[in-house]
Amino acid sequence: NAGVTQTPKFQVLKTGQSMTLQCAQDMNHNSMYWYRQDPGMGLRLIYYSASEGTTDKGEVPNGYNVSRLNKREFSLRLESAAPSQTSVYFCASSGDRSGYSYNEQFFGPGTRLTVL
Amino acid sequence: KNEVEQSPQNLTAQEGEFITINCSYSVGISALHWLQQHPGGGIVSLFMLSSGKKKHGRLIATINIQEKHSSLHITASHPRDSAVYICAGGRADKLIFGTGTRLQVFP
Image (cartoon, rainbow over all chains, first blue to last red; front, side):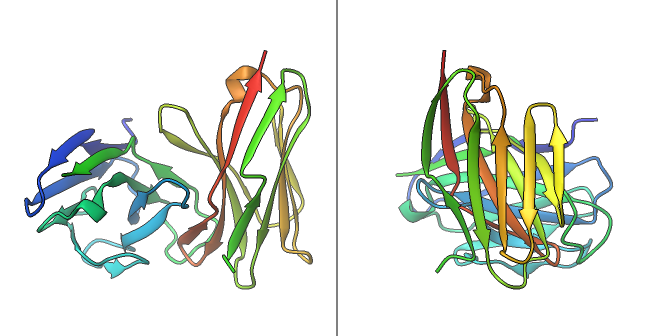
């Protein structure tokens, strides 16, 4: 099992360019998450999906869109990248009980994005 | 006030020392997770606690629900324990993260 995979691992964009970060999990998890991690701050939730076909905003959703393509895949799109979106992005997935705070989250390896 | 607060932010130790990292959390958090972020960036879950104590190898996690406080202990620390340790509070199916404790263990 690959667990949670993310592509790409690194990306450099110019201001205004768009891109999609891809995430897939092979653990049959219902919930999937996108986080960003910035120096000196904890991981912050951008969007999450409690099940296939549903998505909800997290703490910092502005400038991002998401698609839960199927149970396995959850993509994050930056329509018009800004320097403030320079960050490390992590995708995660968790168990099969929606709304359950005890579910362990499994993280992808991260994408390091720089916006110039 | 952050909903999940960790201390210390940075910690250095000599190999063999006993390490303690603390985490305080706010009302509404029903489970406390400890995670480890390796120097290469990968994040793995270490423990999930809702009560009591858990042990895995040299790692021990405890939680006091009344005081809303959890601790992560590392016994006989080793340079390979050098990492960022993150506590996170579980609320429904979301996690609220602390800012992490950067641990460096020197030989």
